[in-house]
Length: 297
Image (cartoon, rainbow, N blue to C red; front, side, top):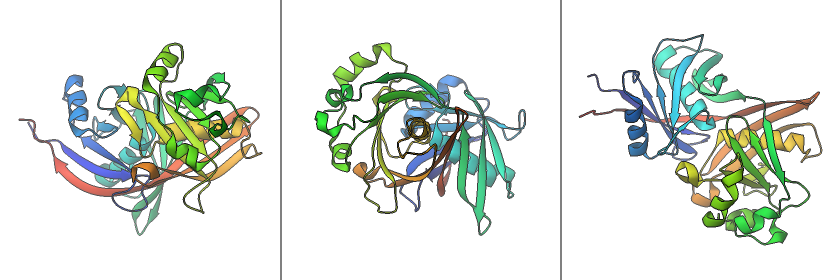
């Protein structure tokens, strides 16, 4: 068979070898699901995506997303990185919007250009859904923190724009830096929750131009720590406006992530709450790293 092409990109990166690396495969529609999962496991990135065909279905491109362990209905940096490859390698012309058909539904990605190269990519995520709310102090033990590290002015909350994430507010960048998931206690805690992964954040940053510092832990998905996650940050955006974290019903902010694991990433978040309907947008840059062929022998 023809060797499938795949591309390595850095998503939410302002320069190469920052952000969150992603492998994107094309011309892969004839491979069985078990092979897709095996490839994702061998690639060993937080996620790997597969463009099933160069042809559109319902005005969008069919895409599947896998972690090394499981298939996901939606994930943020794979959506942006795959849209970048679709525009660059399939469409091959400047186009304002690329639509991806994912398990969660169709997600549009808007693209702006710089010197005819895709520059910023933005996706509108599904409207956030809110699950259980917890006294945020509950997460002190789960994250190996002191109660004083938790910002108890706001709840810890389950939020989903595609899959559920715990959003937990901390008081300082030092608290973010020292957090460690107590996996045994966390595994017991999540038996009765929709969310199985956790995003922590604080309004103190390494970069003075940024607004929040974030870390994301997803051991249940085979991702002990992700350097940049669009889906969870979309959940965060919904959380921020619902709880009026900045005292407003709308945000337009810069979020840094990955500093603690030396993969400095930058995400842009916009959200607004109008008439109890929250719109969430997540954006960032994508950098091309390599073009490769997969040997199926």
